[in-house]
Every structure is written in structure tokens, then in C-alpha cells.
Length: 156
Image 1: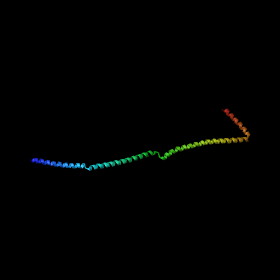
Image 2: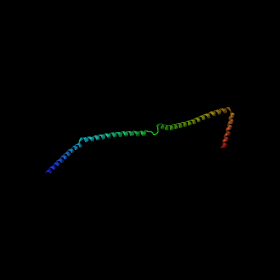
Image 3: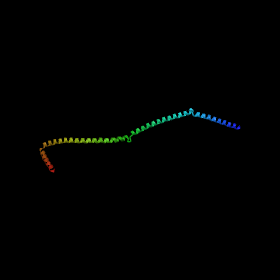
Image 4: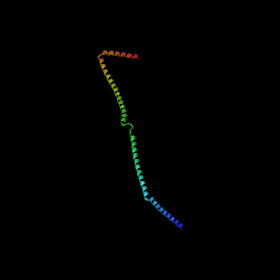
């Protein structure tokens, strides 16, 4: 019987240890299923949503900044504006000057023709008056012109 008592005593000790283990297991399961763990996950989710929002805002800001930079690059000139104005002004001035000079040459030719006609008329009048006053010289002039015409005919 002594052995039976020892075995029962060992079994009771083992049952007590098992009972303590079950109590510890129950407390651990209560802790695991407690609302603190769920609250921690909700905080993590909230933080993650905040992070997503801030990232979205930053991406939007970067996109708007990038589009502004693209727009400025499109409108930016590689050549300075004053140089562009000079480059455009030189041909315009050259063409204008050439046009004005062409106009002046044409006007000069027309004036030359008008003056020539006026001079021709004035000389004819002067010569007629001169020849009327000096009829002998007029006769010599007619003889001289006849000789010149003959020379031209012979030269041909």
C-alpha cells in the first residue's frame, strides 16, 4: 500500500501542476483575445492610413511641382530675349534699308528722266532762239549735220 499512496501522491501532484498549467493557459488566452491587441491593430491601421494620406499629399505636391517645372522648361528660351530681338531686328532693318534704297534709285531715275525732258525742252527753246538770232550759224549747223549723217551711213 505504501506504493499505492506514493503513486496517488504523485498523481495528485501532477494533477495540481496540470491545473496550474490550465489556469495559466486560460489567462494567456484571455490576454491574447483581449481588446488591447485589437486596439493596437486599430492604431496601426490608423497610422498606416495617415501615412498613406501624407504620401498622397506629397505625391500630389511633387506632381504639381513637376508640371510647373515642365511648363517653365517649355516656355524657357535657350537664347536670351535681347539676342533674339537683335537677331530679328538686323534682317528687318536690312530689308527696310534695301527697300528704301531701291525706292530712292527708282525715284532718282524718274527724276533724271523728268529733268532730262525739261532740259531737252529748255535747250530746244534756247537753240531755236539762238538760231533765229543768228541765221548764218543755223545754215552752217544744217550743213554740219548733213555731213555727220553721211559719215554714219558710210561707217555702216
